[in-house]
Image (cartoon, rainbow, N blue to C red):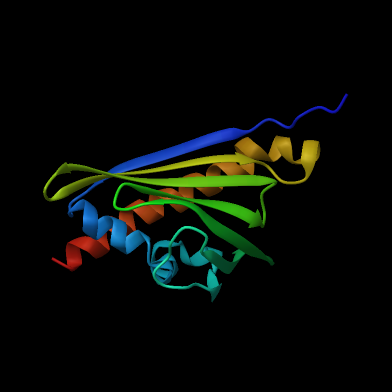
Length: 157
């Protein structure tokens, strides 16, 4: 009997002072990943068609200290301007599914919600890294992304 690895979930939400269409458009341009990813991860886009749609493959490299890893992500769901989902096809996680939700709270305000369902890498050996490496990585990444989204969209007003 094979044991199934557990999955974990992470969610971050923020109110962004911009219309839902603008927040959605910003997040569906892969070039913006370069400015909303913390610099210490040295993100590099290798293939990033614009605009994205269902089926789009985005390929990038991300660094964790001295290690640089390729990450292939495919857009599996695309529902403008409410949501889109990308699924890791190859990368640092055993499984990674990221859904971006965009909810208009007023004409000029959007609730941005990122939900990630993931399984750590390295099978059972990777599970102990979840609270000490993976969860802090996601906290850092999405806190930065939400802050930069707010800052950059305010600058565009």
